[in-house]
Image (cartoon, rainbow, N blue to C red; front, side, top):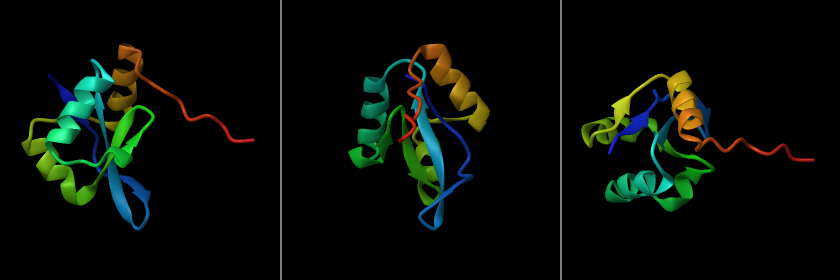
Length: 88
């Protein structure tokens, strides 16, 4: 099982966030996140949003650090990318 995380550089709600992804399946991603106690509500389309204060914990648990660009490439390569639908 390989899970990936990008640096916490994405601002939101007064903090910085990382994206946690799998290049195999959502099931693998949900299992990893569940073992860390990441709430299901943190899942957004194809990734989990991880606050910067949890970044070290996630890496220590085995997530591989990659760039944000690499996260998108991994999702596309695995066919797991779910783009945000534009609201009308």
